Length: 359
Image 1 (cartoon, rainbow, N blue to C red):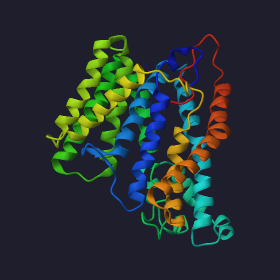
Image 2 (tube, rainbow, N blue to C red):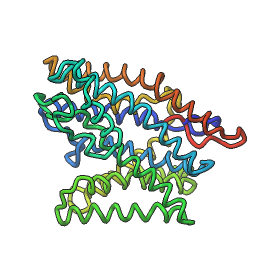
Image 3 (spheres, one colour):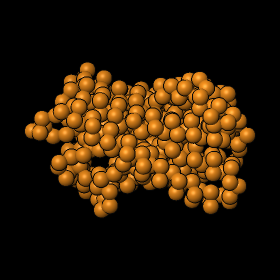
Image 4 (cartoon, rainbow, N blue to C red):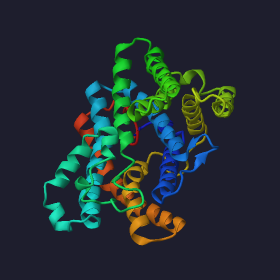
C-alpha cells in the first residue's frame, strides 16, 4: 500500500485497522480468561464487529488493487507477499517457541522432533478452522491445561476466508464485463446463504463464516467500484452514516436477516468513516495491525494462564508484548517482503502502483 499519489492517504483506514486489531484483543481476552465476549449493543460480539471492519476495508482496497494491477500474476504476488512472510515467522514463534517452552516436552526434544514440522505446515496451508483446532499432541499439549483449551492461535481461521475473497474478486471481476454486477452476485449469494443457515439452523461453521465474511468484503468492493456516485457527496455520506443504525435496530427484530444486516451496517460505517476523516499519524507509513492480529492470541494465552495476573493487568501486558512483536514483524519481515515483491514485479514507473503497503 505505498502510492506516489497522496490521494490514497486521504483516509483513516490504517487507524481503523489498528483499532479493529485492539478490539479483537479486548474481545478474546474475555473468552480466554473464561468470561463472556463483550457484545455490541447486544447484537453480536465485539470481535465479530472488528472482523467485519477488517473485511470491509479489505474489500475496498483489494478491489482497488485488482483494478490497478498490471496482470493477474502481479495481483497474486502482492497478496502472497502481504500474508505469508509475516505468517511464516509467526508460526515459527508459535509452534516452536510457545509450544516448545510452555508444552510438556522439553524445548530441545520438541524442536528436534517431527511433530512441530507437521503442525507448522498444516497451519501454513490455511485451512480455516483447521488452523485453530489442532490435536493436543500436535501442539506439545500447549494450552491443554489452560482456561481456553487446545487452541494455539484462534485468530488465524479468518485468513482462509480472506484468501478466498481475494480469489473471488479476481475471478468475478475478470469474467463479468459489468463490475458492479460481478460483485453483486456473490454478495446476493452470501446474503441468501446466511438467511438459509438461520432459517434451517445450519451449524456448519465454514459455510456460515463464508456468508458473513463475504458480505462486508463485497460491500466494500461495491463501494469502491461506485465511489464516484457517493464519495464527493456530503448528503450521501450522511445517509450512509445514519442508515446503518437503522439496520442495527432492525436486526434485533429479524433473526433471519440479523447477521446480514449487521455485517452490511458495519461495512457502511467503516467505509464512510474511513473516507471522511483523515489520518494525521500513520498515513501509510506502517501497518502493525496484521502483526497484532496474528500474534495476540498465543501471547494472551501465555500471559493469562502462566502469570496469574488480574484481567486488565494481563490485558495491558498482552497488548504491550504483542505490540513489540508486531513492530518487529512489520519492520523486519512484512515491510521488507512487500518492498522485495515490488522489485520482483518490476512495474514501469509510468504505471501507478496498484496499492499501498497494507491492503
